[in-house]
Length: 336
Image 1: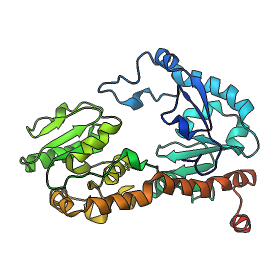
Image 2: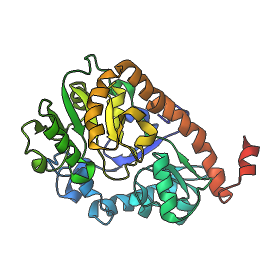
Image 3: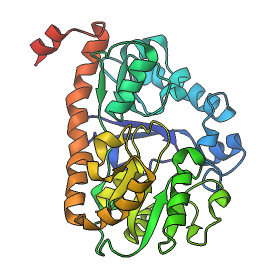
Image 4: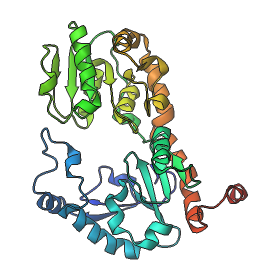
């Protein structure tokens, strides 16, 4: 995406990135075999385990990756180069004080702890959360740019919205609102409810119309969405972005969500539920949505060309802001 916008991009990664054609250079910091040895298991064979369980910055994997990355960045980074830190302080140990002061920008922030002065959040809701948590007003070196989606990965559904199952995709746990789905299934025994994701589904499989298909990856995700009549995201915490909801709308499938956090920005008002009655009524409301119109709504907001242009507007301003101590409104206007 950024390469298409004219940036020179370098990926520092384990093995090869999923989209090597999207990078000007690829630097392999660890091999997949080294990753498996440091983890003690194959990260591609997790079963019901959460992929996030391995996200421990004190683990041998993180320590070795950052140790090697620090040596690489010491010679690679100069001038107005930016280091895009996608997982916050996960890579902080690889950065020198100079890197943090003048080159680091945290992108796609949907996590609770930040370290850099330049920050790009996934949603306005999450930006506001950080300002409130830190007891401050917004900085000039903070922005909101949503996550991007490749249109071809989420083809438009060809079937209508009056048949199929009710689908939940995500971590299978209480905080994701599975109790709401369970109550809905009890109230609508005529509908099938399908769970897809990592976690233990047994607490919610007490109803005969609830089944779990486990984790779903790649193109299988779009295929599973196409078979549904509607999707649910009954999240019970401050959701930073809710990428599954965007995946659904990219295929033209309506998504019913809770009425808070990022959903206030992303989901049409008529699909944001506040009571169990809403959740049940919106199952019928969802049938009235036009898949073509819903997909167009999603593409106009989260497709790669749209999001890429937002990054192209923000990123060039960051070196000057960091160099000049956040800059000022006057400096920004003069630059424009």
